Amino acid sequence: MTGGTEQSLITQSMFWPVLLPEQKLAMDRQFFFEEQVQGLGAITHIRFNIIPDGGVSRLRLWGRLSDKKA
Image 1 (cartoon, rainbow, N blue to C red):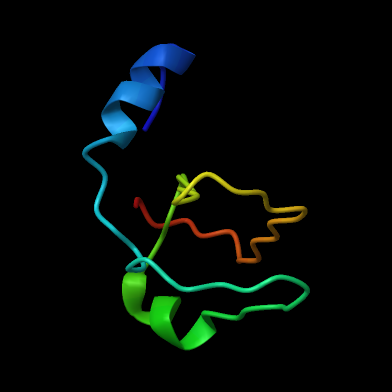
Image 2 (cartoon, rainbow, N blue to C red):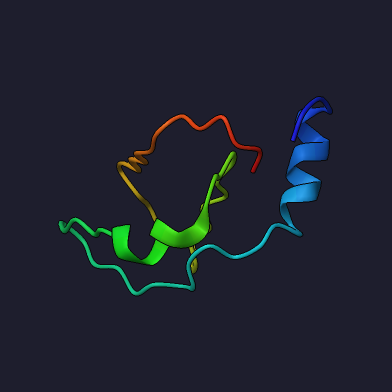
C-alpha cells in the first residue's frame, strides 16, 4: 500500500486478509508462529488485535526485505 492518510490505512486494514487466526495467549510467555506464516509471501503491514481488551508489553516481528510486491 502506498500513499494515503493514516485514517485511510486504518479503514482499509479492516478488509485485510487474516494472517493468523485468534490465538489463546498467556502472561509471562513467549509465542512463536514461524511455521504458520512461512508460506504467506511478502507482508507490508500488520494489524494486531487484542481481544478482549488486554495488554501486551512487547510485540516483535522479524522478517527479511523483499523485492517482490506484496
